[in-house]
Image 1 (cartoon, rainbow, N blue to C red):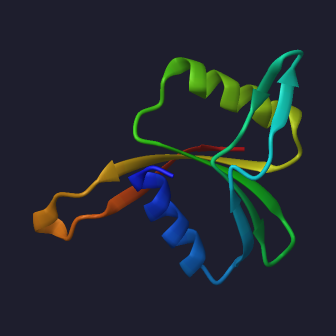
Image 2 (image 1 turned 45 degrees about the vertical axis):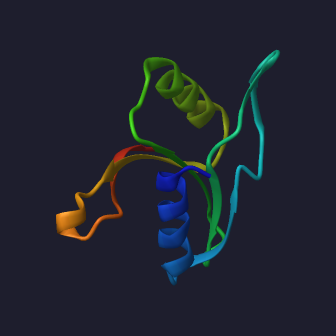
Length: 101
């Protein structure tokens, strides 16, 4: 895991509504010879399954693959933007929801 993903894992571990999560725990086939391995596969206490993708910067190709996978699979997909906070503001990362579906 990179630093942003490590920080996001800490966020997930601290959430009371998250029953389980796995980093790069599943691979989704989206086309012949094309697969997508989301950063986090998450199960909420309700049993709902979610895919969480964390990026410091979303490139067009990553966004395109994310959207195709979202259209193919019956999970909730959350695209998160990670932004490093300055040390004077406590450091670490903040996460912004860029898209869901």
